[in-house]
Length: 94
Image (tube, rainbow, N blue to C red; front, side, top):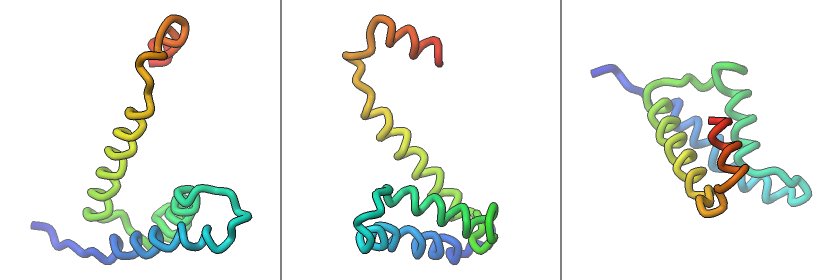
């Protein structure tokens, strides 16, 4: 079994938790908390400063997050409205 450390996952949690609260302190800033979390992830992650590494626990949580995101996106699809030209456009795009 590989030697695992949860330091990076803890750092991700420390970045993700205060993001909504920081945006609550500045109500004039009209951006979703997810945008702030993504920007912080880019800055602190391997592409930016390299402070947070994408080790195994972070990759697992990222995969679960992607699965939830795709699940929630599929819940937003209204199949009853998907007819005619809209269906043709969707199939063509697929």
